Length: 158
Image 1 (cartoon, rainbow, N blue to C red):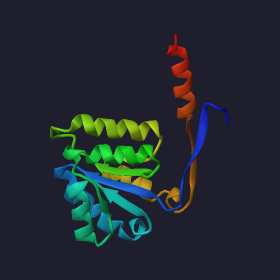
Image 2: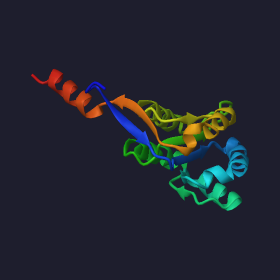
Image 3: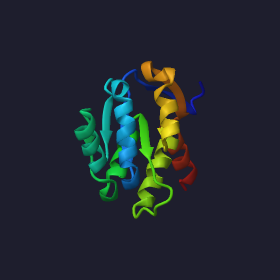
Image 4: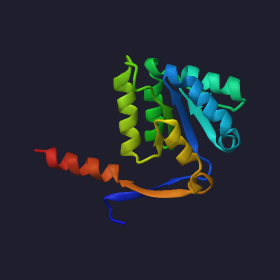
């Protein structure tokens, strides 16, 4: 692999963020109930109310961060950057305006930058959770961010 890329490994036990807009919370909870056995093998976290509701209604342990509009989406994004979240299930509501839409877009962007699996609806979540990779490590190349930053800094120096 070239120095422009590095290999990141998503471990056998996934660190999964669970997020849902208000109108999609019950759908995500139902999905978690249907996939409780699989999800129970992984580390789960989520934004505020969603995390609490999933934990209460499924019995799954879910580490809660702040509510999405209060910075929870940004906290999850930071965990992706730190390598502490490597899989996102985000049931988003495309039919309702969200006051924290810039935060959501930033989270989606960071997931794309770090090339981690992200599902924005039930069908995609179903495909991901039934993938053979759910039970094994997955290695994937991503940009060598350190090298990229150093090169950009050199190009801008006078």
